[in-house]
Image 1 (spheres, rainbow, N blue to C red):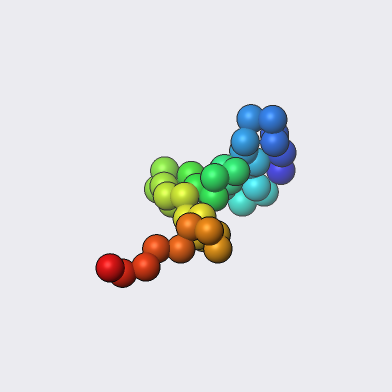
Image 2: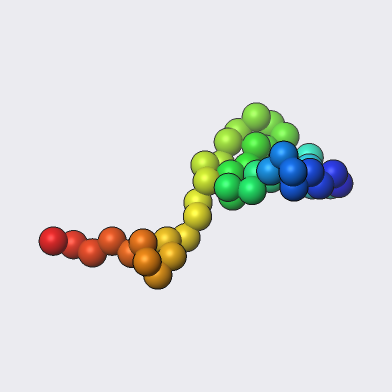
Length: 47
């Protein structure tokens, strides 16, 4: 495992690159897009 918070990423022992923005790059090349939860001040409501 490698952790580089100054660059915003970590390499997990299973080969997954984990990014600070919650995105992931899997060892097989698949991408998991960032999935940040909405904060209390950012909740969208229907009009």
